[in-house]
Length: 396
Image 1 (cartoon, rainbow, N blue to C red):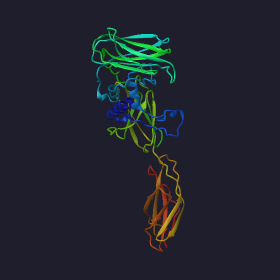
Image 2 (image 1 turned 60 degrees about the vertical axis):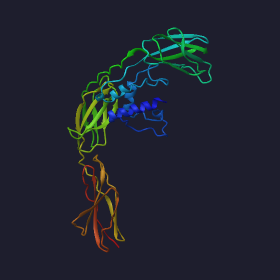
Image 3 (image 1 turned 135 degrees about the horizontal axis):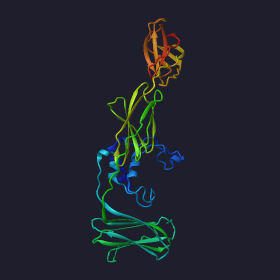
Image 4 (image 1 turned 45 degrees about the vertical axis):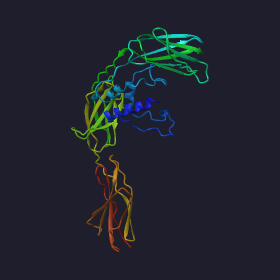
């Protein structure tokens, strides 16, 4: 489809104007046949802010709402980019007059006429006729003819037994042109779509930007999560959420949310840290002034459990240590283990390694000499466990 490169180019310009419009969530794997993935591309839980702006700013043609013949309507590149970032400003050229009509033909030989009031000659007349009830191998066959103001035929579309008929003609004179839809055989309804140089239609002005989200609040829910809530804004197409660890920034994009959302849980955060948020509503007219809120993740003061069953085994020029895993209930999560070494059971002790594994191999040993070891666990908040049992071993 020639629509694909145009839509892709507009999407690239929108992302250039506002990188936060990137989609978030998980695309459907080929094995997912759930109802959320019927189109085979994206899960219904994904956030698709760029797609939503393109479709909401399109000019709806054909029957009301999206359909297989007209999609979401005529792509309005200027309106889509304006919606992506208020900083781009309104714009766009004047466009031809558009007319959509629906009709019905009773049977072979029946004719319907539609009038186009052509007032200029600077745009071509473009006609598309669709027979929505047409089926492959059926008998319905409608044709389209264009007559100029004198009644002379200037363009025809006589595809045999096709669902869609098209024609184009650059007018040389103004006046009332007639589009005739004729049934060669069969009966049924049709859709007639016409673009022509009638009254100049200026691009519609964008709507006013939405209001700032009210009652925006943030609260620490755990050591790694902050919950955000706000009141829904009228006339918005979605929300953009930014985050920083300082009131002066730098601000990074967290996500773009669909229209009518009133809450969001920000996860994967650092424990005991204050985060600052800005939330703005947007629509095709631009972006609201941001609402601000801040909250602190709860602090983790609970140390992990001590490693158990530490064992030391001497080998050739090495001593291998192993132990059972610690657990952490404080919320920040287990980070790893610290390994300590001494030449006497009472110390002094020197930390020789950190590791996330449950084993450690010490090669800085002297053959036949006894070394002592213990291990402690630590979490992501910096809490350290009690030490494990002390073991000793010597290399061979």
